[in-house]
Length: 218
Image 1 (tube, rainbow, N blue to C red):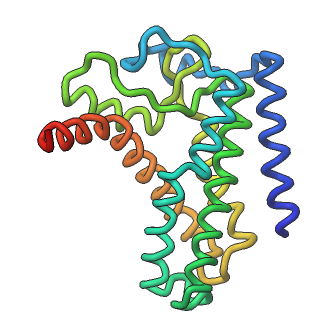
Image 2: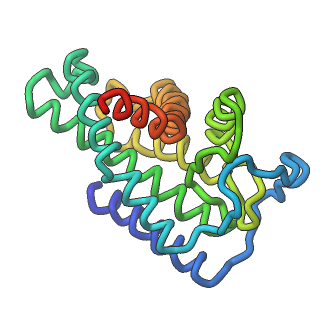
């Protein structure tokens, strides 16, 4: 099971680099009827993501300091709650919970990077460009479900939808029995989008908070 899991990750990411490197133009649904090519309120001018930047996004989102730190809190809460019960409340259980979260995060990120490369979906979040406070809040929420295409216009984040749900249901095959079911997978999928919204908010407002804190210290 461990070999097949990492094999899937490797194939997905190799596919992403090949597809983007060759400039494959594939669109699974044709987003125009569902989401007009709205102008982005984020970075201007927009430059489409490169294979190197996509790899950087994958690594940072999977093993970057922010996500690894979140994993510590997640595993700690799970250990305190003894969920799943099969892992216990000892250090070994903490390690299993940490590794389980990391396997889910890496699988989801590989799926999002790989699928998104096929039709030019950019997984990155950009802070807003000259927007008032409510505009920034709106961007945090909207960009949880939308993404930039190769031209910088907004489109439904199809790869993210597939990756978030797909990795949570796929991970049922290696999770503890008490949480390896469709109900828990659906809840994890919901939490995945809520967590992404929180991450977007941190990216959007983190520099402002940091500036205020250090400014007051000065």
